[in-house]
Image (cartoon, rainbow, N blue to C red; front, side, top):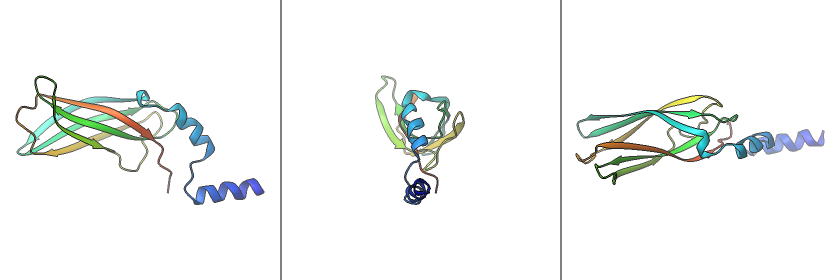
Length: 124
């Protein structure tokens, strides 16, 4: 009974369950891949789209860096974002993302998307 009360208190405080913490420790940046990256320019708006693939046994949030590069692979514009917001991407699931950038330089020839961080967002 005492253990149930403690678990209920931790859950009410938004604490990550012990099982989720153990699974998350096994989830790392290399467990998330970026696929189907594309770029579309509409006037002064550049839209970068793609798909994040979560190969972890745990649902996780993912932070990415989107870079618009020139012909020498130098970053002209960079955006750091959590494309799913404060939501987890399901375990063994996918998430289609879109990153919108304004006034990208005309010298952009390549898009680079990298996973920077994984984090478990408690369910509220």
